[in-house]
Image (cartoon, rainbow, N blue to C red; front, side, top):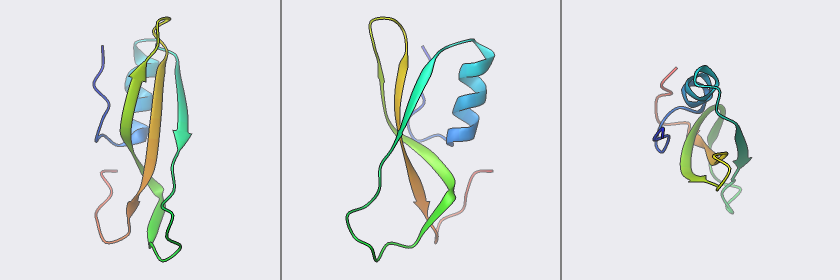
Length: 70
């Protein structure tokens, strides 16, 4: 089992691909249109692993004030 929460999405995808694990990614967006987000800098905020071992990941864009891990 790979813990993906709070990690950069591109890193998580590489890790899961390396161990040949299937995953599904859903994006979430803030309700406020005033948020200043970096859509190129995504990170995992929630994970669930179903009975078949498929990772269901929810990703969000990092606030533009923060630094992307890439």
